[in-house]
Image (cartoon, rainbow, N blue to C red; front, side, top):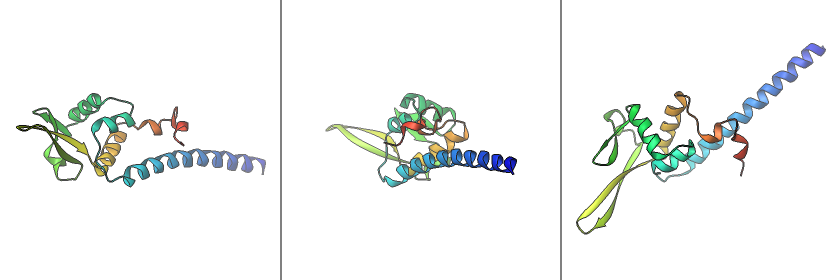
Length: 134
């Protein structure tokens, strides 16, 4: 009986640890899906502890996007998925500049893509996940 009790306690401890990880993931998903705004890549990159330059290069290396005339554009396989939006701002009367922002659907796509490559947001990293509950 003592062996069975010890096994059950070990199992419960393991399940509690797994639940803690799932709770962190659920909070991350909820935060992403709760927002309807699109985000600049800089904001998403910071979730992963990297710069926008680094994340853009990574996505380029993964054949997700390419740069044309100073703007990142998704490859054809991704253009009709609703992952990005193009925004334009006026520089002056004769000049405008376009830039790409990521929708929440796109952010979730990036999350799953990066996770498949072993890259997780900082909030899911065990060494710092305790700092999430603010």
